Image (cartoon, rainbow, N blue to C red; front, top):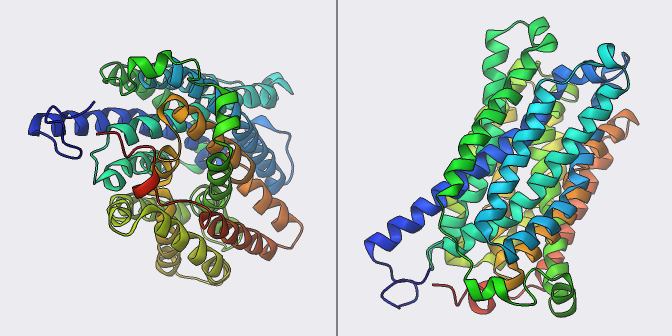
Length: 436
């Protein structure tokens, strides 16, 4: 969608308004997708007993965390499938399909019978629903990141593209907020019995609304790009763009691990390791995620000034040096306010990555394989390291070596720091530089 003026980075008021509305439309669907996906993590502490045999609560949580991780294993397939659809059929088509798939997965979980009713079929159906959702969200990231990066205003791409993570985090925040409201409204027994089902019903309903919002979006991919023989081609990706693929895979590993450590796993860490009450932990995480969401445009705008590569280097360095002190200090706090402050520091570090995560990936691939390159490289790194974060943390805790998890996160952040040295500055060499 080049500006009518023909000048790169110069837009008429009408063009600017249309692009901002497109970002709002795409990001609203993104919010619904991630709400549906993350509500599982925040309600699992209530439904773990419903789908697995009675026993140690930590073991039940390990089972639900394993299913959560399994959903991530579908992300590479989703990244490939929807990346190919987006590069051959258009970004809009891929985003519409993905949100409908997420809707279906949420409906299945919302009305699924318990282990006491159908036995081993309960965890089996739960696993299948999560695999379906994992396929959907695996395609969502790459296609929405590609779309929002292409439609963002040149010169301010860091700021506008950061709204992908505003809504991604907003989905998490909304999930935490809904659970917190239910906790204040229902008794603990009601939450364990049926209250946990309510967020899944709400998620499915809002996904339908998101589908209709996405139908109104303008397509960013040009017709000649979609018709090229190499569009969405794995051969094209791996024969000519292997280096950027591996670079994205490398820094996604550390970034995703840090992200899931301080967002989805942190609620359980506060309950199981810090000893905080469930309701207090939910309140702390609600406030922290809200601040984290608000940070994204600020750090995105910062990247427009200092450069994407510099932001990524600071993330890797501060993540490597700060993880152990932050997690160790959290374990010893007694005040929820102190815990909140430490979590905010950690989230500020991660914001250096998340605010520009989708954009910096999109800048490294040409348009004919952009959605595939972004989606597949992100999905593989995210599935292996992000999806397993909670499972690894709980396993090490069960083995009484929880501090080993601190080392693991620190090492992966250091790895991201080293990988970013191989990355060219996207502001000078990025593939989005010719997009007006």
